[in-house]
Image 1 (cartoon, one colour):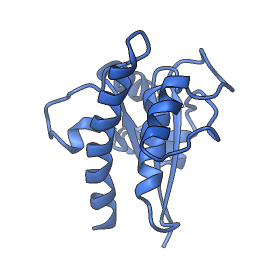
Image 2 (cartoon, helix red, strand yellow):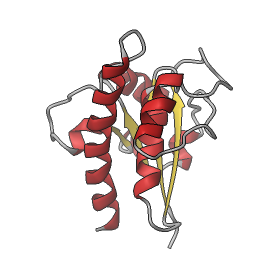
Image 3 (cartoon, one colour):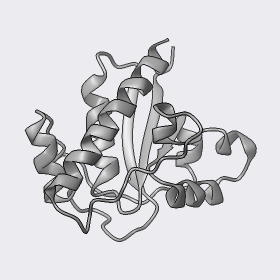
Length: 153
């Protein structure tokens, strides 16, 4: 059986999606799931995650310092089985890249896994304080728990 490939996507790939990648990876007990992250913007390509994302991940026992920001590519829509957007803007931007209905059917708002149909956005903590990063971590942790159980079933 081929592994399930999951892509987490936010705007710059330095705050939310690196946390989502790290959290989901921490919940994977086997090689059956491959997790990556990307941004819809190319603002931080090649950079480490934001220091505050690194810090909140570390506070929860996760090391995300091996990640580097990258921009989502059209090929990702073929490579990955599940593509999770952190908010509606990124969701729309990913759908705009999609070239067919098969690709579009892979794209979801991440919080809809926890709160189906509510289209709750994971807020971008970039311009806020440390508490915003902790709040984002908690949201993503809950959503990733649902995702991992969904993939396993």
